[in-house]
Amino acid sequence: MLFLIHVSAVSFMFRYGGADTDEGYAGMNTSDGGFLAGGIWGSYGANGDFGIVKYDRLGVLVFGKSLGTSAEDRAYGLVETSSGYVLAGRTLSSSGNGGYDGLVVMLNVSGNFQWAKFVGTNLNDYPYWVVEDNDGNILAAGYSVSFGNGIWLFKMDNSGNLLWSRSYEYGDASIAREVRVDANGKYILAGRVGSGSNYDGLVLRVDNSGTPLWSLRMDLGGEERIFSVSQTPSGEICAAGYTNVDGDYDILVLRMDTLGNVLWVRKVGGSSDDQAFGVAASSDDGCVVVGYTFSYSHDFLGFEDAIIFKLDASGNLVWARIFWGENFGDVGNSVHRASDDGFLVVGNSYKLVGFSTVSDWFIVKFLADGTVCSDQYASISPTITTPSYTTDNTLPTFNDRTSSTGLIDVSLTVQTLPQDTVIFCTPLGQNDELDVEERGTCASSGRILEVFTTDGRRYRSIDEAPRGVLLLRTERGWRMYLKR
Image 1: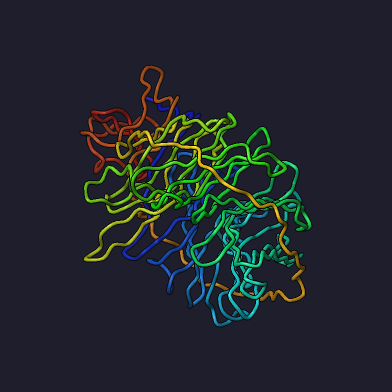
Image 2 (image 1 turned 60 degrees about the vertical axis):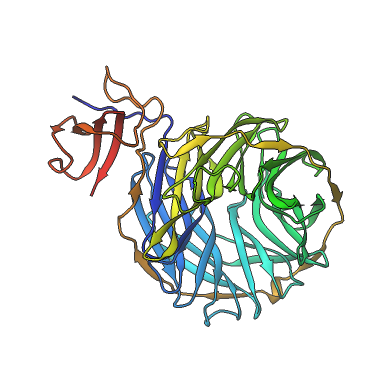
């Protein structure tokens, strides 16, 4: 029997982590058809390190690396560039400029370290997100105490040289949690502005030299924060975060045109706290949002579930799901539309180690219809309302901070991570050809009936089969298994 695996759409659910807290924050499709995830390793580094994992197109682990100093290092953003993979976040290293510094790290496509830079001042400065612009440069956005407690945006070339550094100040403290490059090569930032508990959600668009074009502050009358932004195929902009205007937190989703005019606003949630941290445009001009929900959790113990839902271009619900790992809480931190029009979600899945709760990376690939290769998800029908709001379009004070931004070369400790991915289900998806007669989708459990290698050799059990990718025929369908 010869197995022909022609994958047009793939789904999987993985957990990756150790005995300490590991947090996944960013993910994306790579140009070779694989998947990339980045975040924080607490289990494999000193005081927490940058972490990155690479999977091939079937969800098989290619490499995992931790990179860091001897101090606390936390990666939040990840991007593939023309030169490799870039991670960005913060470090408390005493070798930096002082306080928290930005830390930007470049690896080649094989996961080998290329260079790293401390970026910042003698106070706390760090980026939350990183992208590549249309000129092949690296763009990172975050926050700087030194620069008026304001939004900080800086650009580097692919060798790590600083091209410019800008700040955007609103009078109150402001933070950018994400930056995206739009279809016209301009930059769109998502974040919040305010002080105490009086925050407004913020979307800011600047040109490719960093000059502000428009600004939108969104106020529903409570605490509003925007964490993520994405441009749809039609050019409109979706943003997602949360609000507590009605007491408990609800998910906040808004849609704007390219001039920053609000088209619609939706509040999504139930009777408990629900928050969103990521949004990605769908190929049909809708938007997909991820975060967590207490209101619709399946867990009788009361822990939160990760949530993913889709709204169409008019703000109507298309589908909504909850998904979970070990039943100690789960969060979706980011979502990326994959090349097969499905969605890659990266987040945290909490577990019990001894008497402590720690988290693993939670890496989930959904199909375009919001289904996933697992029995650990369920459909829900969240309440969606249209809230009242006010906006403020005042532009921030804009400053060039290039001359006062320090840049220091740094050598990091690099470790290859153990190959201990926990596979909740298999990476078989829609239209996977198993042979000329049998077609199937994945199954997450069930008694194993037969075991095959990809060249058609048959075994009675996994123990008898050689190491590598195996195809299992189970009571519930076909599944793929990686034997190490």
